[in-house]
Amino acid sequence: STLWGFGTDFTSQKWLSLDPCGILCASLSISIHLFALFALGFTMISHSLLSKILYALLYVPFSALALTSLFMATTTDPGAVPMGARPIPANLASESDSIVTERDTVRGGLRRRRGIRRCRKCNDNYKPPRAHHDSVTGRCVVKMDHYCPWVCNAVGIMNHKFFILFILYTFLTAIVSLALILMKFIHCGIQQSNNNNDVNNNKTLQYAVDLYYDEHQQQQQQYDNNIFLDSDEQATTGCDVMMNSDSMIISTLLVIVTILFFFFTCCMLIEQGEAVDTNMSKIARMKTRAGLSNADEYRPVATEFNEVFGGEHPTLSWHWFLPLPVKFPEWAHDNVLGYEYNSTFPPTPYQEPSDTDTESVASRGSSVSLGRMSVTSDREDLGEVEGDIENAYVGSGLTLEQDNESSSMKKRSSTGATMT
Image 1 (cartoon, rainbow, N blue to C red):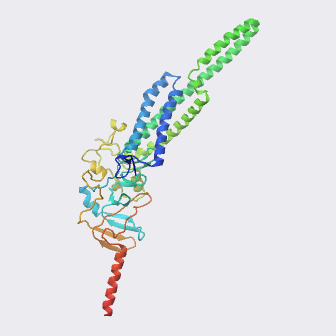
Image 2: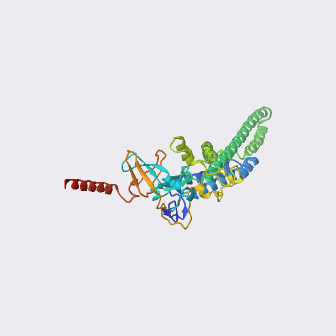
């Protein structure tokens, strides 16, 4: 479905997932960042020039980069396969001749198919080797890592960089926030301790004065002492902000949110570091480790660049840290995506050349040779070897009932001839 041109289906003009849960979580992500930005500015930096410098030079830029990365991760097409995409010509022969294991929903068990992969959920559109179907956005996404509700989008080849940057800069804002909170509490704790000592010293001095001066002089000294105490209370400016009930609630929420996001983003960065190092998505790593797929199926197409951040070199570069669109070398672009496409292609599922042969073998042991036929596959869940497929006889123009009826007619003809 689309809304004002926004959506994730094949007809959407601008990419945006309309998943209600994702929209709620992404809005919460933005709200938390804005809350922390203003809460720190109003409650945690008024006491110290150093705190103001750290807030202006570190926290504000990190927060801006985190929000920008979140926006890019949300609104960028993650690598959805367009309708009409076709295999890369150099790989067409090998893909058409490859055997894919499919789940047979008609007769049960598994079937082995020969031909290119197609996604039934995407109207039999071509499904590149490293693509996985995302049930939330309803599209096959190249190198899909997972669907993240915090960015309201699937994480794939084209927005994985923005997802990692969002986590990174959120982690850095949490570190700076913890530092500012710690500096505030240390300052106010020392200030409160000094004030308590001053009050105790003043009480001792006042007791000595009461013993020496007469009643009139005692009253005058009490007046002077009150003025002295008032000046001490004024010296606590910056800490008194935290003493009222509203500020205490805001400060408490800020501390809780900061600690939670610090540990959450730290764990996520460690997990995503493997994706950057291996150039493999989370789904690919899990399926490979479980023995469901060959590691060669998900290996990087080249070593001259990093597939998560793009660019021309595989080593760390300045553009890795900026939320700029991912660009691959022109010679490797189609190979990275795993398909060929341009605007002149018809918006219909790609049809294989007429000389492509396919085979169908049922897991129960029966086999039948068919003419040209397309393979339909869908790996929506990690627990499945492959997704549902259409009837094996569709590609040959027959149905299971037609085939059975034809066999019965032949038997009746044979029996009639024998009786005659």
